[in-house]
Amino acid sequence: MDEYFNNMDLQQFDLINSISIINKDNFTIVIPVLNEEKGIGKVIQDVKKEGYHNILVVDGYSTDKTVSIASKNGVKVIFQKGVGKTGAIKTAIQHVKTPYFIIMDGDCTYNSKDIIKFLPHIQKYDEVIGARTIGRKNIPILNRFGNWIINQTFNLLFGTNLIDVCSGMYALKTNFAKKMTFKTKGFDVEVEIAAQTAINGRITHVPIKYFKRVGKQKLRPLQDGIHILRTILKLAIFYNFVGSQTE
Image (tube, rainbow, N blue to C red; front, side, top):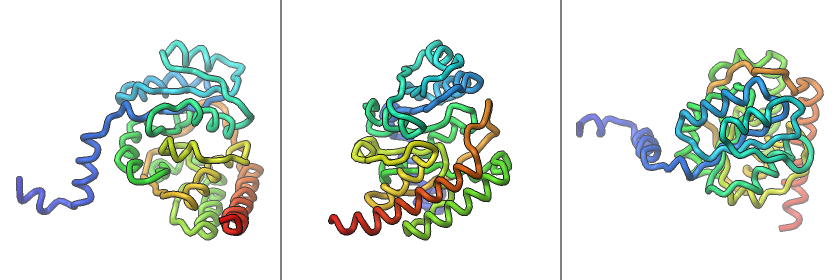
């Protein structure tokens, strides 16, 4: 046994040790939804199977059975203030009471078994992004190309080394998130969060699986991709120039 531990990578040992002492009740799993009746039930059930009891569904005023299905699965459902995904995230931050929370979509694209990967790292970092490295074939090829351009641009402007800044699954320290301000309204909220963390905190990523979405896709690859790139440029100007002038 001693020889085994002597040969074991110390970082891996620390990771395993950290996971063993983490209390899952210190985490809230936040699921922003809009018309996700086909996937939300399974997502909630899978999260519960992994032992997470704090689950918060933030609904953007769905017109299908999303809210009914989520409520029947015994989780807290609240309605977002503001518009778009940004409104959902802002609303979630206001309601989360645990030290940490994890955002994941309600369309079955993310694996609840991957949540455990975030837990030890979020104690050391302010944001941990789930990098969709497994199952990338499930991301449409145009989206993949757009994501590559977005990642390269973000890393160049913010001095990071991230590989999936647009991922919809990520963990945040609650106290850190409550200090954030938001100017975005839609799918660019992920890059806004990452930008603020890159400037004001510590950010990293972990590999996760990605599956084909259940239900209708809301992202418009070309239009939203261009919009996200514009957002990155605006954020870089603000934080690297305007922000430095106010320090």
